[in-house]
Length: 287
Length: 328
Image (cartoon, rainbow over all chains, first blue to last red):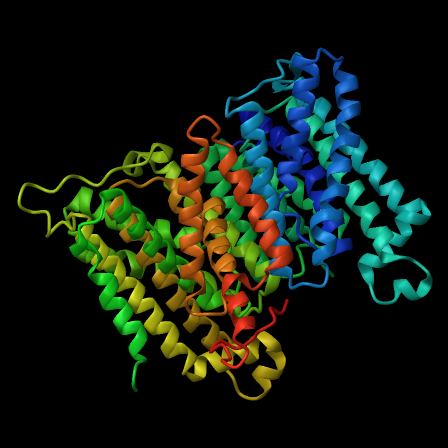
């Protein structure tokens, strides 16, 4: 097979761009999972709420797009905080299944609320950028812009975790949650911050997704499960691993779609996930 | 072995319900509730030992679609199709479970592996739309006149008895399990897997045993429900949504008591209907909203479900199920 076939190259490029889209929610989920040790089953639904927020502010309230984006981040971040305070915090000492199911309940709540507010119609932002041509390969301008924004977001997150005091505390608590309180770090505060940052990342992901996908109450189901899998494949608490796993999954889906069709490529991606868990239970990139 | 008398009397009384000629709608709710109860009971058989599956929907789908395709494409009666479907689901469960248990995939990881499996079945059913009708769903062919019984297409009373039989079987198996070494071994495994292995419990084998039983009941109920409704679609028979609903029923009723998941099924079906009456089809989002709020409230205030409430009222009668704390 000809690796320089323009269609194959296009699938390759699209896979990398798709990986960028998966990367942000996977990073956010990984942060919360690694720090608070609770799976937010409703993470993709937080993204969905953010997408509706942008759609509503831009097409209905008539705000400029950048302002709608700017409002989306703090809004979803606040939702993350509320989720932590109202649902997760009271359950911190409960078995993990109870925590997961409670956030599963929030998933139904958000889907139901979105259906009530906006019905099940598909809503489109109607924003598009012209495609760019590199050699014989067409690249969607919107996807490329979203990809760059995702990289930027991931970079900011990295710098935050690496260079700020709070960031170091977050990483430390993900390593050892018993010792950190002895070092004078209040875990409850760190949990709050991680939830807010996790929410903000969902907000950013929403901004990038809303320009590529139509919003509907069940849109979260289309990328939610794969986000969990990326997060686990990369290794819990391993940000870089999660980031790389996102691109791997993006490539599998895109190249699978090039050879067969997209549905089967998702089947392959899920199978790949299951086999990865069997072969490397601590994540693909665990040492 | 002497079976307790009360449940047998209850079963006989329930079997007599169609003789009172209740309204069709009432019978419909009862049949749906009992089949949902079988799913929940099956799920709780492994759920209560910390084996939390988010993919039981996959097994409903595997058996229901096997049964329906055998009937539509080859004309094989559901009387044979359902056992074959259950077998397919059980093989699928074993194929997924065995490596999980061998390689010690537990806790969150196990839940996510099962979630992936549920999604795989949902996507496959959708993708194979030439046979399964995709997301639009499919209907089993009508039986030729006079062939209703052979094709397992009979009235509400007939399905009520079949469903009741499946339910009684599930409870009997639960009762037998509670008196077996397997349940004691699994309780030990849920507490501490290493310690259990060190006293000679074959961890993977015991887990596989309970998984096979659990999957078989979910698969049986899934196929019967599809056959009763005469309609199959991927959303209601596979994927995350229906899997979470099964889990919700089991948890709301209480997964540590044998009747817990059945209470949960009554709640979920009752709730669904009440919301449909209360809000009509206008406000379609209201049902999941209330449903989700209840799920959160149950987790916050009543994590052992309704049956857990009864345990407290009668402290002298200890529940037969071991009080397992779900280990990670």
